[in-house]
Image (cartoon, rainbow over all chains, first blue to last red):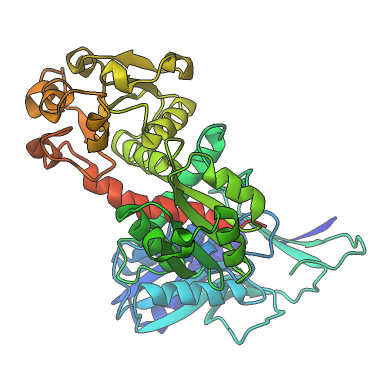
Length: 186
Length: 306
């Protein structure tokens, strides 16, 4: 497996900071703003963004965690059962501007699930999408408002986002997955 | 991590990891029950049949709610209005229903082993909702969930089941589950209602409530079936209440408050005094709410594994 480093911890930090500024700029402050991260790394990203936004604006932003397991469209086709965790959104999202956060935007299916899960919880005034990496290959009509970095990839490549909350470092890698003749799972 | 079996027939033989998986999964579903929209889509397109050959209100409603909240299609059947009265065997009933292309069967039946039997003759996932005096696994699981929610862990927890142990599937499922999870289980009741050699299951047997109350954290009070008195297993309800009825006065003899559970329906002032059933130490209604979450967890885990 060949790995290319796309972000080291410094560029990771700068990108998150820039995204936080963009969110505040586009929404003209933090009023009515809520940040919802998709488990697992979207959650950590959401917390870091919220912390940065608080530094910038001096106001706290509500953070929620979304577990999309129950809304997946591949729940039945998988051999390993994905572990179900809880959604922790302890505020009413109705009327809020929700910034939905995930680490990598790929086929868009995760975001589709997340939108269904979110709208089952209430009726936000607006939902915006923020991702650290957009690697292309969309299978659904979904695009992100805030993108850390666009990385054109082939389907034989993998994007690996590492965050110190669960991994040894902050960083993003592009890896060539060895072709074993089988079709890659998207 | 997934469950080893395609069916939930009992807690006997189920591992600690599997029970923990079900209890942990139920936490997520418990949160959904507090939402304005209490419905999620994982069983969309699946059909569940509830076969209730024995009357039941709460378990049936609890299963139906759990199924509907997971977006399954639900058909319920109760013995009173079915062709069971026309002499059809359980096997024929089940295979006919299965011929209508269903995915999961929930069965309550007066015969012990009926759900095991069913799991051998149909392809659907089978969930035991009570089979005679054998097991009632989802009740055992919801009791454990409620205890874990209250005490944080089941390890080392001291739980006493009081009442008619011999005829109780709730007692058996609780004993199997709780001992697997590392709790200390005791039972208390008249000698005529406690099976011989029960100690072999790893439980302590008491015949006086006064002896066990200082030793426990929680009491699971079983419903006393009025039919048992007619068969001479205890002399009168009045006498049963005097010796084994759980009352505020008896419970207050312990060094600390004891959590009170009951699988329902309660005979007020027979096995459990009304004031205690409604007291702050009672978790009886939490058990009912948690029951829906536990059943959602079991249906989800069985229904989405391939």
